[in-house]
Amino acid sequence: MKAFQDYYPEHLAHCYGCGRLNEHGYQIKTVWDGDESLTTFTPSAFHTAIPGFVYGGLLASLIDCHSTGTAAAAMYRAEGREMDSLPAFRFVTGTLSVRYVLATPLGPTLEIRGRVSEIKGRKVTVVSTLWAGSEPTVTGEVVALQMPEDFGR
Image (cartoon, rainbow, N blue to C red):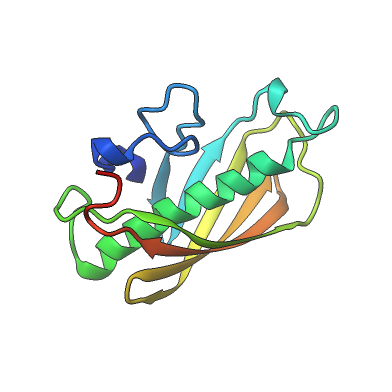
């Protein structure tokens, strides 16, 4: 199954968090799991905040990129279109709200799950939860804004 990010047009696939063409980035991959979107990511030792715990900025960026990818996929779903159809939907962050519930341990693969709470015009709101094992450690809400077709050219 192709990830949402695999459909991003080449000129929009360089994001540090989700761009498949950014060799130094996270290159996250997001898919549908029923009505939720799902991303997994395993932090490396250098993603440390203090020994044994993941840096909070990484966690915020995972919520951010997971949610903007979810917004694009949700817009395709809402319009009944395939993700490789044109014009391409791409979103940027309008607002990002993150709540750190528990310290996120370094070691386990993290799972980010998102749900679309609203689609209104060119705006999609996604609520996501980041899990470390069976513990939800971070929650976030992203209001994603659809990019104009000529953005980034």
